[in-house]
Image 1 (cartoon, rainbow, N blue to C red):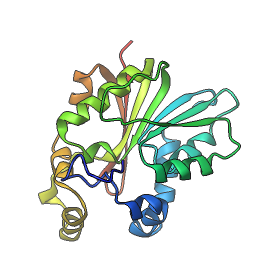
Image 2 (spheres, rainbow, N blue to C red; image 1 turned 45 degrees about the vertical axis):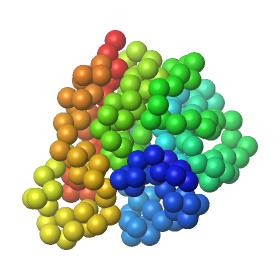
Image 3 (tube, one colour; image 1 turned 30 degrees about the vertical axis):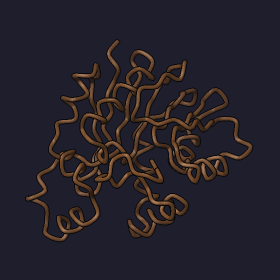
Length: 220
């Protein structure tokens, strides 16, 4: 998410213009080149089927969507939602002459209805940077956008006790993350998702279990 005037002043997911224009490069540098391999592994764990229709919330440049697209056949499709003009240009460039994907300018932190439902909904490193009450709106948007039995995938920080982190990890986390992230890691996300109508959870962990891909099924 990127805004000239931030809606959530304490958040780090509303990007400054430079970071939005150079997002993939910033991520590569910030993770010492580990981001590409890590994302590739997480998307593999989504078990994408060739004909899946996927909704990518806060899709950014389309980098993740491009990896998802590699699992799809001509019946599969990806819809990316974002609000940044910089992200839109990069997304459309990534999917030039590709009919498998579309970009829609749409806030994900307000209720919306896309007039269709999806097999999978995906969100990556966005929800932790929102106030808790806004996270509930995002989760409800995912629920209403899914087919019955469809799956919601959240790639983000896992639950952990920051005080038990090694000192260098704790220093980095405190330095780069916002106060909403400190709240997020203390929340039981599975309980929250269950309250919104999701069940049947699966988890994959990365980076010493500080990061998790959490899958939740929409109740039949």
